Image (tube, rainbow, N blue to C red):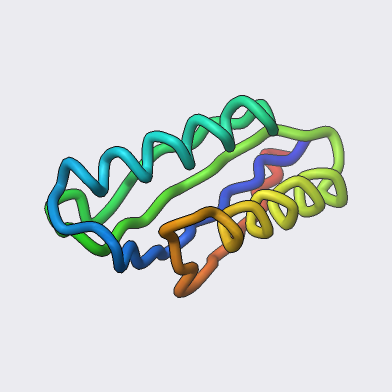
Length: 96
């Protein structure tokens, strides 16, 4: 069993308020959760209008599968409207 965790550092250049930011992130996080059946949420830069960090986690039977899913999520984040991907950090944990 493997736990895959990814952190996406984002810039939201079109957001002029926290309300705009929440709207963009709500759509992005909802898409990630529904399409990939993973846990996702905003974890940093909560009070900044144009910055955010979104974390995604999943459990898989193989590291290969977890890596593939997180890479596909990264591609979706990169192409999401109103979002610039600044950095990605991925980690895999095996409790064994």
